[in-house]
Length: 377
Image (cartoon, rainbow, N blue to C red; front, side):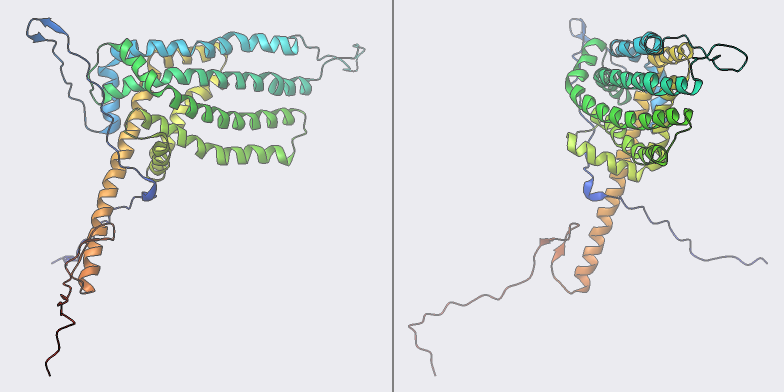
């Protein structure tokens, strides 16, 4: 007979909540209920609750499909805030290049066959294209993203209400309600993202301009390396903050700390979603005007709402995961404190925070004695 292995199976120890001191356990924001429309006397409008999956990102995709019409109408106002972006990308960038470089080059000078000299240098022209044209255009597009962040507040608010099935039908009122509540938070956060992202892009443009002249120094390479090593992780913090603003009952400072905790405890999810969110901007940056405009149209029609749902799902998943780890950690700490109190022979109950919850030690009563009364011998 085959030998049976009766060794006990070791259970996997629950993971601890990293940076638990920074974490604030908060509930999902409670939204004001939209007044029901009275159809006839005593009969109100029906509000069906749709059955969406309980999985985080699965629910996000299902809500995106099921609420697509409502989300699209809600995001039309957000499109208005992105008009400066498409104007600079589709028209002004080309105009600015012609204005700066002239658009006419002569690369045939001094070719050694009697052609008159004085031609343009290809290396200098490419270097100027990177540093004098593309770099200012990148900074202009970054400024338009700051403008777009104002409209993003209302878009995320509508996405959050659809995700958690907080019923709304008046999309105009709902969008501007979210705008009024969170515009300044999105403005501050996206401005920080644009500053960091612009520094990363500037380092690359400078390196490319120097490489075109064969004059790239070690400092140019170090600027790219260090700006991306420090910049990429920094961009994750405001990205996660955007997902938390409309979703959980947190102050701005608590949102900042919770964003760090969520990144540390959910690094894979945050990094993958961050790369996925940056993909459209990267494609627009490297693509031509026509292909970039197509990407912009896709993002306007569907992409922005899909990303908003995914960001809300990321916040919900991260906060749920950290909440469960915190409960497990508090439970283990409570058991550990009880064991310590029992071993020390103490008669007091020690709570999860390490403090005494209830003291049961008996103190000896002091008996009062009249000092005038003589003691009997």
